[in-house]
Image (cartoon, rainbow, N blue to C red; front, side, top):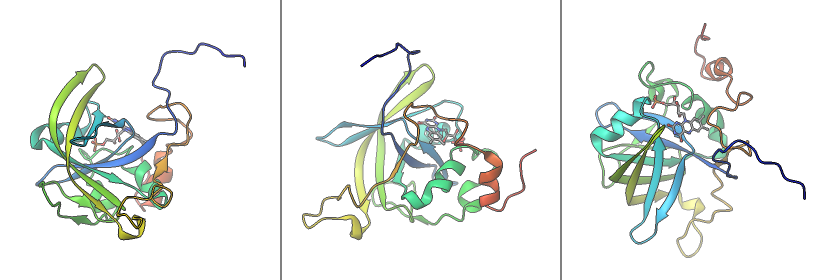
Length: 191
Ligand SMILES: Cc1cc2nc3c(=O)[nH]c(=O)nc-3n(C[C@H](O)[C@H](O)[C@H](O)COP(=O)(O)O)c2cc1C
């Protein structure tokens, strides 16, 4: 099998895409694919967020976030909240997202996502382009239809959105046509 060396990058696939809610008084949502399970007992998840994201300050301030796993039907939503910033637009209002209170933290969940994982930030690691927030999992909400007879998530039934690109890039050009996304939400096009 012939191979070629390519530029160093974070190639991994498949890559899950999740929606992070952050912020208590005025919650916001952003798309995130830099997410990993990083310990089991107790369970922890790590997300990496660029410091310039509006969500970054919200997570830093509240020291908590929610990982919401979208369904495949929420693909356009996931693109939309991944290209528009909450600094300029209330994405939750625009996309008519329903929020639900969390069990253990103050940051709300996205009610229409089938799985929601409440996390409290335990560690922050500055990694040049990104800050890695390591969150202790405090509660996991799962739509009943996704649970098997043992009460575990049946991953076949719970398939989230898997990134379409083999190479992990935040913005593959074919995937992000901002005006298409804005049309889907019946918003005026960007100039
Ligand atoms: C599929 C996808 C994955 C993304 N993954 C990340 C990520 O892991 N970390 C990050 O900082 N931004 C990521 N982004 C970009 C943010 O979601 C995007 O900049 C968003 O507009 C930030 O929103 P905010 O400014 O309201 O926080 C991703 C975007 C998309 C579409």
